[in-house]
Each structure stands twice: as structure tokens, then as C-alpha cells.
Length: 263
Image (cartoon, rainbow, N blue to C red):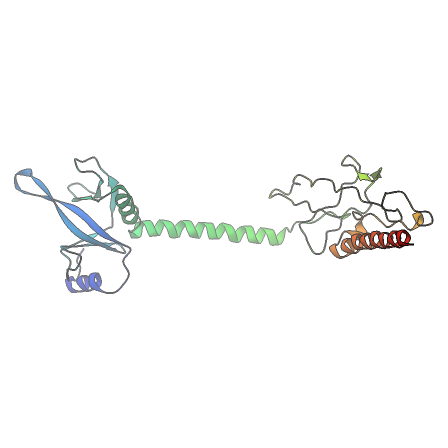
């Protein structure tokens, strides 16, 4: 591959952001099969790895094009060493040594992702995921999920359990989980459409028409309000009004009892 030297040098020194930078020791082959290491400043831009004599140098000493190569850890006398190895018989290999384990791992990760071959694989995988998402979207539009015909959902919270058409059967003021109808409450669905664990039973409430001690008041037993868990009080505003009325009754009874004490 032929590269324009001036264009490459300009690209190395321009203000375009670098993908990774740092000092590495580059192995150099000497005569008589001796080796030495030279400390150089490396700059990675795209698939081009430049190395300079110093960090402030104006021109790069060399360039490594990261195409058709692999980046591997290697066993060497020097710690934190790795090698850039090119395919083909007799291809040159570049052995580099980092200052520490963290720097070595960062360099290997950055160099392994620098080639266009890697980017091509990433784009191919993303295109595959996008195609699968489009198919799922088409299927969901053609076959939308239908809710049960005999049930109603709470308008303000679609994730709530469908409201039963019949009220909950009470036993001595308490609802039982074993009844034919389940308690209406904020029970969410899991991702598979199943029910999660139901919430604990609410505390027993005092019926309207009874005094503070819980004994029904004569003449008011016929005006007992509906249960807060019935379909008519499933929304928050009605439930709030139901409990608020009970508090108002208790306060009125307390005021009347205070008047009797003063008299």
C-alpha cells in the first residue's frame, strides 16, 4: 500500500482527536540477532498507529497500518508485553511493552478495535439486530395481544390486575385469598405475563355506622358504606373519599362525646 507521506504527516499532527495515546517501548532488531527497546510516543487515529521520538515531536518517526493483523499478549522477558502480528509468511511483527498492566490492557483493547475489518463486523451485527427488531415490530402490529373479554382494567394504571366484575367475598370483615374472586389491588405482571406475589391483606377497617369501640350504632347500620376494595371504589379518588368520610365520622363522634363530658 502506498501512502502520501505529506498527507500522512499532516493527519498525524492535525487537531483531529486521537483514539488512544501513550508511551510504549518498541522492540528494535539489531545486528547479530540482538534486540533493544526504544521508548516512543504512540498516537492511534482510526486504523493508523503513529509513533514519535518524543511527545512534543513535530513529525512521526513511523506508521503502522492496522489492517490484516491481530493484537496478542506474548511471553517475553519484559513484563506487560504484547505484539502486533500480521498475516502471511515472513510478515513483520511489532512487539511493544507498556508501563503497567492497566496500560497494556487499554492498548490491546484499542488496537484490536481499530481495523476496518472489526468495524465491518460490528456494522453487520448491528444491521442484523435492526432487521430482527423490525420483524418483531411488524409481528406485534399484525397480532396485538388481546385482554380478557370479561375483565376491565383500571384506566389510570394499565399494569394493575383486571378488576373483577363481582365484589370480594368477606369473612368476618376480612378478605380471603382462597375465594373464587381475587382481591383487587396493585399487583404487577412480570415479563412473561404472569402474576407476581400479591400484596399483604389490608388491616380490618371499622364499618361506617359503628362507634369508636366498633359496636354498631343503632339506626345507622343500614347506611353501611361499600367496601374500599369493591369495583366502585377501585380508583384513588373514590377510595380517598371513602376513607375520608370514615375519619369525618370518627371526628364528629369524638366532638359529641367531648360535649357530653363538659355537660
